[in-house]
Image (cartoon, rainbow, N blue to C red; front, side, top):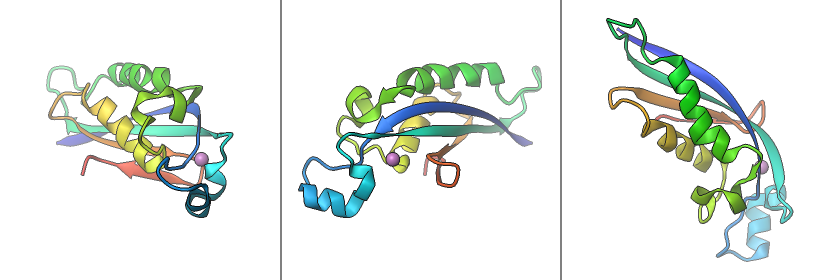
Length: 136
Ligand code: NI
């Protein structure tokens, strides 16, 4: 009997979409306003969902307090009020698109979970634009 437990979280961060190895013209053509050299911010919302069997003793899939603490330590403390391009190691050489951010978030949370826990992460860059990754 598999049940999914989800936790929502939030962080504000700035980014700029560009590739160092492309010309300014090509970056402008592909990334448009997101290539603004002065960066721009988003209110990111994320949902981390853990699916597993219910533990017979505790009745939990995962202690949600534990999931909350993992998200705080791995994501909020690392990304909130940061410039992703300049201040977050994972994006030094990785374009911080929503797609790449959700994969980084997934990897950081996944390594803290039990191996049987399946994880899915949804990241909202705006209320209407969101991406989902579940490790495939
Ligand atoms: Ni953006």
